[in-house]
Amino acid sequence: MSHRNEATAALKALSVATDACRECPLGAYATQSVFGEGPVGAVLMVVGEQPGDKEDLVGRPFVGPSGKLFDRAVAELGWSRDKLYVTNAVKHFKYELRGKRRIHKTPAQREADACHHWLESEMELVQPRGYIALGGTAARSLLGRPVAVMKERGQWIVDEATGRRVLVTLHPSALLRGDPAQREAAWKAWLKDLSVASSLVKKAAVKKPVEKKPSPRPAASHARRRVRMVME
Image (cartoon, rainbow, N blue to C red):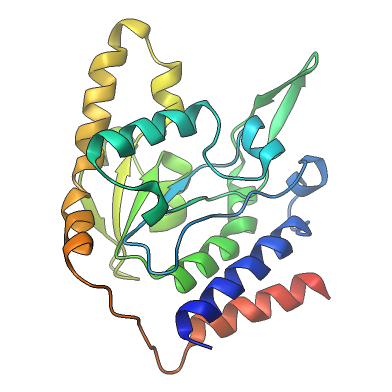
């Protein structure tokens, strides 16, 4: 089996394993886990905060209102979502009930920390060339430190410990919650942030990807161990 096929199979197994995860309380109350989706070797991994109400019900990332706004941005930038790997820092929906409505609640740092090894496995298996962090929770999960999103947005940040290139910007939900009078300006600023990654996307489009053959292959083995630990 090729490395790409092996990594794809490991991602599918991890998706099943996250559904059984109870390392924090969120899994007991969510409908299901929402794992990432996209190809191994994707040029960009896009990381959000956590699934929303719609994502929790459907079981796919970024399919609710924020996802529709993200898809609009992807189309306007000339990217293809099918070539991106899209995921969240936290795999279960955290919410509070208001009547019959489930209202999003920001995950605590301990919940993001409990979920971090799933994100690490995704990064090891997908091996993207760059990362887009949508919001503070995602940025902290990728960079390992608190991130002032408004100050550090719209530029590549290279994590010295890991060598990861991370582009930080707002989560699309911030645009949806913002002042309607400022929405158009906020949209243009957000697109400008995201466009910083366009050079990577264009390079990937004109260059035939070469399958990576790491030796040894710790990513897949680490992921397999995590699957076994949860499923046993």
